[in-house]
Image 1 (cartoon, rainbow, N blue to C red):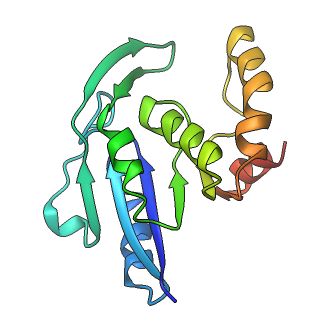
Image 2: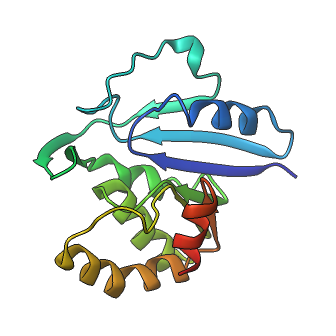
Length: 164
């Protein structure tokens, strides 16, 4: 039986697209990817339609740029995520982070509806973070990550991050 998997990701990135293509070719997964935006500052790559090879859509929304010490961060707000989740045409959700509105809504929705969700993480403990960020993460992330059906780590540092 093919599992219907919805992925929510901030933007298309050249290092995630090959993974999505490989999963989409699987006989076990019916994959659909939602992107919160098609691009962000500080991520200057150009992608062509041929780079995709899987079912996807870019949600409409509003990006609020925030400058951090390291780079620019855009808090994407995609109100259509609520209507999209309500369709319930998936068996599980892979949420590629927790930093933007659609990801946050998807986590809350999955928990409220008891829909399995998986957190895909690229974060690690090697990044310098302010005391405020460290405090907020230590209060919130155990509930978010702990309630996930699984964690999908991008590497060993991300695996240690999820385990902690």
